Length: 316
Ligand SMILES: O=C(O)CCC(=O)C(=O)O
Ligand SMILES: [Fe+2]
Image 1 (cartoon, rainbow, N blue to C red):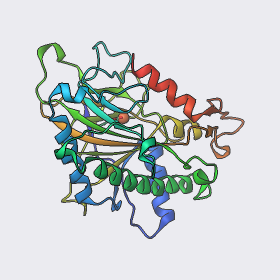
Image 2: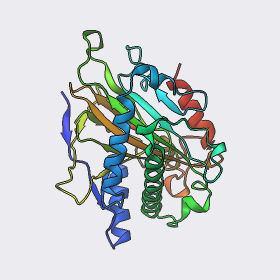
Image 3: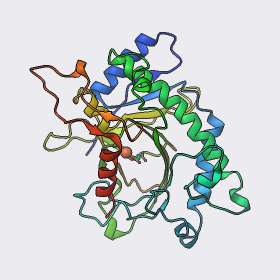
Image 4: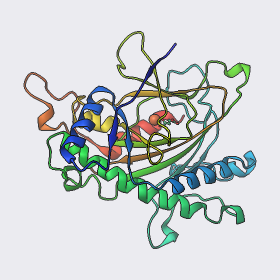
């Protein structure tokens, strides 16, 4: 049985930046997960991303497999191809997903993403592009609040270059409704922490997401994340969670919380936007997060190397 949990809520429209940064800090220390409201991502755009995502996942498997994710990590990933928890006894997770990496502006010849084609996908790429821009803008505002919450310059992550051409990925996710007997006990997405700086997640409101705040506790305690619905806030709330690189930067002061999606017998769609540092950023423990009594727990690491290592252990 999982417990249940109301995540902290941070209002991004708050005129009091210090107070907003303090609530971000508290959420990152206690949960590693929080909701943001008044985030500025247009509700109509979000609905359009969900509709376009469904349109793609509704295609016959053969057509989806024509866009299968290759070495550059963009495109379609079928059910069972990804196992976020390497120790899972199942072949792979139940979800199917579609990855879109940074879209090169201007010369589309350089765009290494894969895109569905045909008349019903005529606005697909533009919709994804608009969402990525919007999520990036909101994500950078959240990163500034994180910096302020750590008593750093509000532009700290910009100044060290972490947000120059950041490594962003949009992952569209689709979880099946009914699952076969042989998949009883398998996860939509098995337990994992995200790898980078922050993730912005939007769900269609279907339950299933659970978090485990103390990864080293035995037995682990999993809590259901409650959905904050549009009736409560002006537009769909975003869920923000901290990735492993921010945990390393903060010497575990901020939590990169384990999470998973359990099968609830109902189809589910979600959209995850991973905002990760520029690959050349060296992530080393912040001075304010270590002392003689509490030395750095992790050696400095180049962001790109860390993330590549994590991706390699997720796909066999
Ligand atoms: O679908 C969700 O709610 C979570 C997805 C997730 O954790 C991920 O893609 O990393
Ligand atoms: Fe995740």
